[in-house]
Length: 190
Image (cartoon, rainbow, N blue to C red; front, side):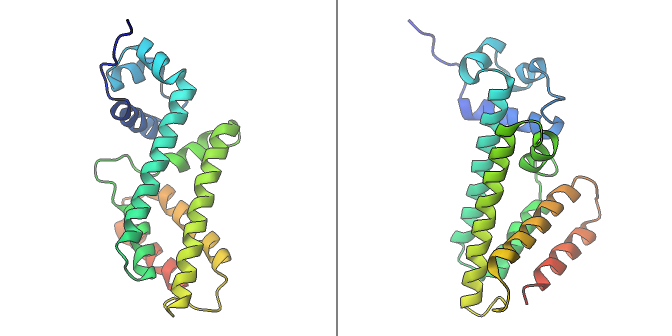
């Protein structure tokens, strides 16, 4: 008779996310994962596979949680510029989370070395750009966003600014600088 799992998969995946997010993939050892996740090494292998498979599951869960945060923003049915501002400002508020973004960190650390990571990160970025394009088009229809802007091109610009912000929060504590970047980026849409 098989033993039942003595842990909840998403809870231990969230712990793996925290450790990978804080330290990166390469600097995180299996022993650190065992200790931090609070489960046996064998349980990690049986449930997730090797370290890379665990990392990919953690990245997938992180990406799904980030997508859910963005979906919740849209449900607020606020003006488009306010929604984009909130999306950017979520990057500035990391209550209880490591600084930056696990997807950005992973793309920088492993993107050229690991096609599976590169693919997941690129897919996530593409979904976000599509979301931004849709928001911009809606804002153009309501007159909130300049009609002469090409929505798809502007989504690339906003994505680049957002990724830059997600990187910069790791190296600066100057909140005014970060807010100025958000303000200047969004001013382009007027």
